[in-house]
Length: 325
Image (cartoon, rainbow, N blue to C red; front, side):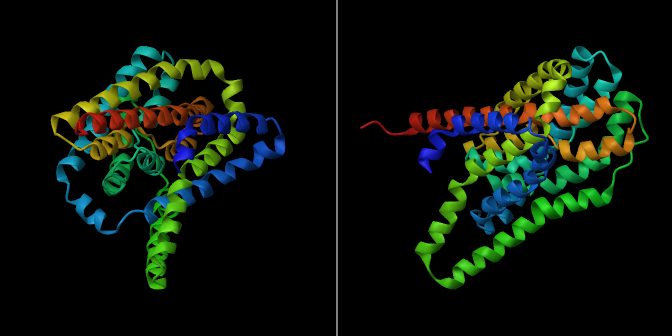
């Protein structure tokens, strides 16, 4: 595991490059997109497998954390995104797509990055239902307030399907798996199984990134002008909310794990859901659809870099607290 983490940067960058290369072959480009969800599924299964079920009950009782997430995601973030879009994006259609995307918190990726950064995954998972419900309810409100568009319809079945596939099923299978491991009574075997899934997180993430870049990398290459316009406001969003999350963590004296959970819960975005909404609500606006496709290709390397940054912070904190002989 230590060796994998040591070469994590090389593994992830290599996955992006391989994906871009494979994307030049039509058969790969057309089919590799279907692999992203399975890789994510296995990653989430492994993440849930390594989490004691009792931790979820404890996390649900953290009212202060939940309220902080709600305020940052659904009060502060919409105002920040509206301001950034107005400053850096002249096209009203691009502003609409940017707002749609950035006001919808992630419901899957963030758990994986939280786990990789040694954050409090149960705490992050405990606010997922609140994030999901509020983004569904408030997205039309934000569009009406910030863009004047109020005719957005959301496919409830797509939302239910995404929750079942990316949360309920892997979580349930993980609980069944832990029960079976306990029944075997082989403590050493159980530790090896849990250790295997824990150590495979980086490799599975790399495979998911490779698949995404294979299927969508050409869109990135062919539309570099849109990418360049989006880079500055998206980058500023991550920087500002990263700083806000850490300032809140210091103010409330959160542990490293809880602050890290707050970081990823408030910066990761739900591009698959917003793409589905955009296709239904604005079928004649391909520019909006393109924003939903491009953003994850920017978000993935940024999320990876944030992971490395918070792990470095963790190392400095632990070094400062270590007693001197």
